[in-house]
Image (cartoon, rainbow, N blue to C red; front, side, top):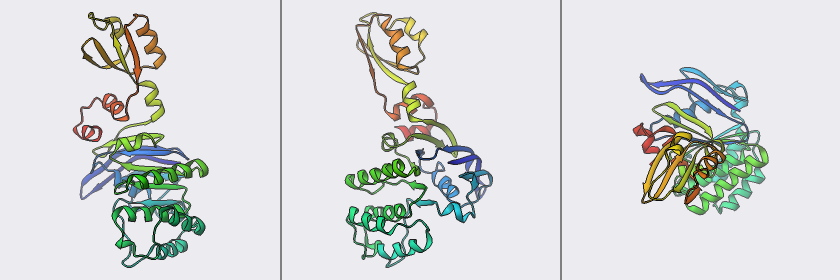
Length: 300
């Protein structure tokens, strides 16, 4: 389990994170969403023990991460900005990782190289950005991590490689209870993958929730009551966040359970009534109210 409490970090007097709380359950996939400069990469560097917090605590399995060799053996990080030594091949890096990580799995390493169709003898620096990212996934997953941290993980990957990467991650979570934290500015990518989402703005956590809980409490209703429009009783008896009309059809964003929405609307005998799925972007837009320009940039 990852537990962050009251975390603050500043650089040259400028705050990057401010009193941030974050909790990631074991065996889950957590999406950390924010624009560039929101503090996502700083969080990852604190979680992996690269940086020391100015205030607060960063705990993995109940113990501090910084200068903790035992915990770092369980962690693997794939940064957005990858680095490999000049001339080093994937086989060279595999030999290096094997001497660093106690959990190194040589058989998995060879299997993943074959699965991605990579050249293990060629200098990694000669690869394209997407192939370098694939090489990084091969190395990270071969360490058999308990905790995998990903910074913009699918940037540069083609659609086929992207599907393969997510499948491998989901399989590791299901089979070995690996815990994953994914930092991204792309809500669409996170929607089908994550169990929970945290959204940060200007170094602060704005919202942290389980996706299933959010989706079960917010719905889009398409209704029509003819030329008289939507009865006032519906607007009074339901928590309507947004209302929009297109001709005689009303679209309502309602923060209630599906059962409650059906009970109230069907009692008014609508001519048309349907509950439509909300995208993750829509959920956050209406949940947060869209008052923050940085939040709008994430969502729209």
